[in-house]
Amino acid sequence: MPSIFSRIINKEIPCHLIAENDQYMAFLDVMPLREGHTLVVPKNEVDYIFDLSSEELAGLLEFARPIAKAIEKVVPCQRIGLSVIGLEVPHTHVHLVPIDTANDLNFTRTKMPADQGKLAEVAAKIRAQL
Image (cartoon, rainbow, N blue to C red; front, side):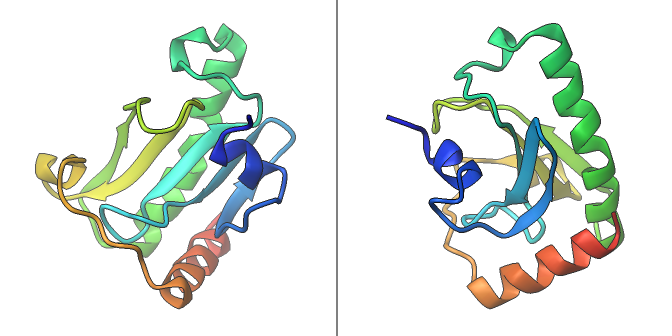
């Protein structure tokens, strides 16, 4: 059965798209730690990040870099934190999260679904910075 991310990539489930090319996709997390929390995924469904080929792993980070820079321009923060947990969805993904403290990357905090209108607004602002 395809992962939820593969279903998003295949346009079976809508998302707030930030960027996409033939190998990678970035979209807002619908249960964000902070505004601008973005997921970056390879379109190739591989469960564990270190099972990606060297080229895919490097490409994932290179694809994420301008997105992180765009998020920084839209969301006030000290920097963009990057986290790879890899347990919640069996599809490699990295979290780009605006942070001011290390606690901003605390995934044990209770998350609430974000307002869809606000997500659409934030996604448009980030895309405009790319």
